[in-house]
Image (tube, rainbow, N blue to C red):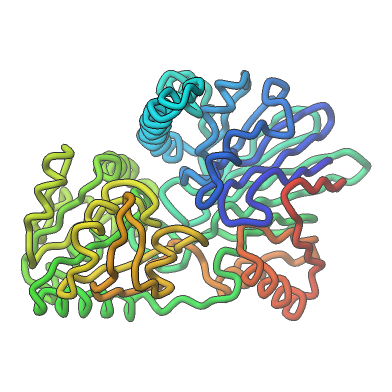
Length: 459
């Protein structure tokens, strides 16, 4: 088997791996890059002709693992996309939202280019490309082995990261002995709200392993919930609003579940929570439609018809979103994007980041060069929508809500491998990947390798 590291090997975004075995050609992931220089990178052709691919596997719906799927269809992909049912249902609103952004950005760039006498800018992909994509899904449940032919079979197991997330096991035979490679996808943190904990993968010859938090430990969830409650109450006492940049998938649903429980338990008063993200609203409805992925506590909540103790407001129109900036205090506004590089959160930060009575709570990973990372790293001023804004609001970073396993949990996930697989460490910044590699060697003695984008290895 030939394994090609196309994207996400030496970075945290843009995951994409190519496999060739016994005349079968397929991808695992087809992710969009994010952060500085991402647009140019996303427009570069893949190093493998997509028209010649038989399949694309998607471990979960986050855009950094799935966001270039419509472009693959636009560029001639004719095969099947293999995913869990919940992943497919999440991808529909997410990719339509992504296409709308691509079309809007292209329209804006075209106006500038035409004034300079340059040709118009084509969107990376369109809503029509997404519609074509949605007809190509082949949906597979957790835990069952399926055959592709050519001596290749596969199985999804629950990764416990977001709704429908999976690790992917692939068995292949190009010699006398059958071999196995496991793609971890993004491994979830144990004890997260709503969804079940990750399943163990078992033995393997090769593992392609994420390392997002390979050098860090998360605070216990209960401590993070306490910190969240304190940050909210402290901000309200100062007379300000709480602003939470949040990813539409996973993190937002966890936060709504947690805040609602805090109100139900009497730790917060009955408060107004504004979900300022039409995409997050759609995703929340998708979550409600897949209780088979829930843990026991979430199933009990679902059985109560999702009765909310907090006052939850869905903010749909741009005008409604703008009106939120007239709220001076006592409210929680949750808006995308999670790294503040797009979406409505940028407008809220422009109008409120300079207000010392307000609080901004970061509850997720902030990639290098993003606006969120600059704020978390202590920037005194930041550029938002072309204007320099003072950072006067109180900034909170609560990493216990991460949907990613931390260093300890990543090592625990590997403990199920009784043999000694070769581990390719991907999906992490250099410090995290190197720290995880050293820890794996020290604890298990496994051979590790840190590939770079563009590397090709024979397994």
